[in-house]
Length: 346
Image (cartoon, rainbow, N blue to C red; front, side, top):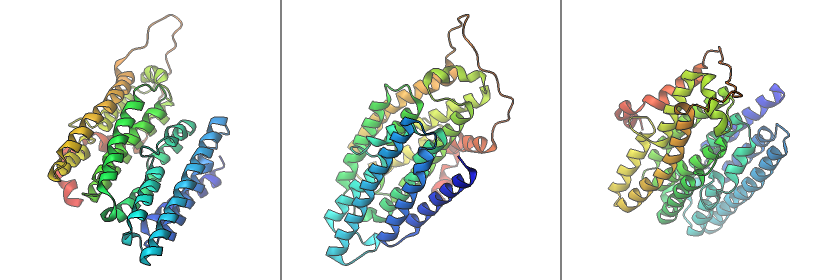
């Protein structure tokens, strides 16, 4: 892709995200979401492969439908209450429609069907943008409207997302699809707590974005897309692969890594809200996703490919590890001990 064109698209993404996050009026929030959708489409379809074109088409249709629902929900609210302010979403029907629209934007169950397919058809760098930056505006809208949302509906969506994200990821061999189902599962954790403690949702999202960025950038460095190539990639950059093992375990939420922090805080908050059953259920369902993270981790660093005569090892790269990956990996692995300091900031 032409560097100038790529710069324009990335700048438009930043602009759309900023407009949505900083807006008070529903029309401005909708405009930001539309700018985002139109800016990401060329980045998804830049390879001109039929699967990439299919992914871009699916993405466009789903996001257009979700944006129309956002507009419809805000118009319904304005019709009944006379308010266009995002924080003044009080009409129950509008809240229901908005929850459906944001679930479609994020890829929560039962509107998850587009996300694994789109991620599978996109390059790894675009997949990273789709999994992190593109999720921020819808989560910001949920954050702003959280006092009006229906807790029972969000809890149901969250538990279903965690279950389906774990269940569907078990049988995958394509790493991008596994990461898509991992994203759906994590979104379930964010959705369950948004009504009770919205700041915790944002903390969870930031940590999830850092951990996912580490994994996507590492895979992009080693050029790995399938489990079978992941098994032989350890010869290319052994130290980077070892850190990928820890990053995957952190994304799974194992202590003493960073990924354990949001899960621990969410379970604690749910218990305080007398939702011990929901906390138990979502914790047990996260064991499903733990299985495929362990499978990825096992393929990353613990397996050796069969030593047949025609087996070719990959050349070890002499390039030093990118500083960005080094910083992100450090955050992904070592943030748990400073949890009290993070909580004072949040």
